[in-house]
Length: 104
Figure: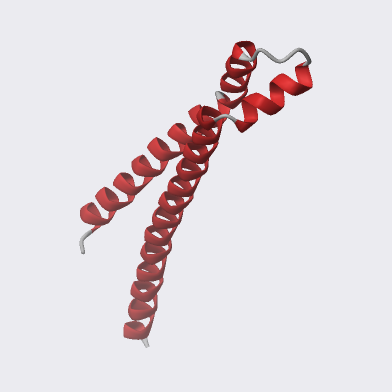
């Protein structure tokens, strides 16, 4: 694989990681807004009861599940990016060793 291909693969993996991290961040940042919206819909009389009802709702549960799935996807994308980066570093090290052996 030549340097341009490696650069392209690393850039693609980095962009994928960034996109997935951004998706996760949006879901995480909106969790409290979703909870507040659901609490406003509640007919319960106390704030604690409204919160319990909101957190037990399918809408909030789905939001939390989507957030967890987005986090998992972002972490996997990071692992992919870091793996490519490590592979490039290993190849660079192999080449340096090969050049050093040729000088002996």
